Length: 261
Image (cartoon, rainbow, N blue to C red; front, side, top):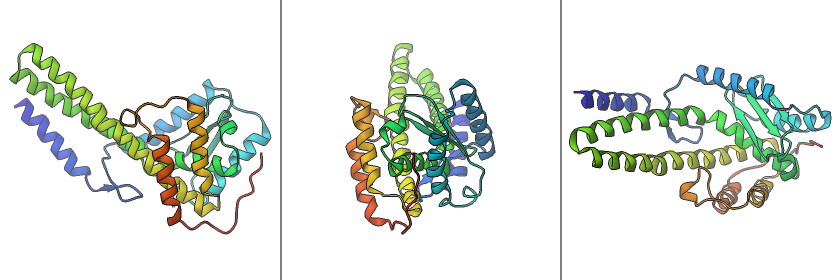
């Protein structure tokens, strides 16, 4: 009875959310209220501002804000009119992020890798893409469903196998879920955000070929990369090839932003 109840709940939930679509038309699993994720994003952002050193360099802040504003002006509503917060953190990591609730963070270490406004736009546009495609919701939802699936597996293991074989089955299910579902899901998100970021770059007038160069820079900066099937990100070569294949489909705005550091 317990197995039937859990399985029925799983199927009912999947049926309920199967109609969700990403900005690129991909089917999505969405279980969390968007407002709740925005509140969580706001809380995380405020916590980071308290725990990390916020840059006080006026020129750096103006530069990052200029690139961010150029991209935000191209976004679909309601994101275009939202009050986006942009913060530069004094940190040597080559990193940036965007959180639900319209929050953007850029580490100063990224500015050593992103050599110009176009490359910086590639990173910020990519991170904004994660927010607009609601990848955090999708990620949390997939983890919830995998957890529910593993509960079903545990019930089957307990009722159909002896203790030793049940433990082996659960270990195999855990590895299968990680490699077969969760990691590829993340790679899908990364690739989708690359495309969305390129869309925003094109609409804002940034040079698209600089996006591929940015990821070459990031690859050189990151050192040894894990095998693609065990990574949450596409391999650098796969990512660059996908970017170069997508660029010809886009039309770049005639005016180019003039963001200077």
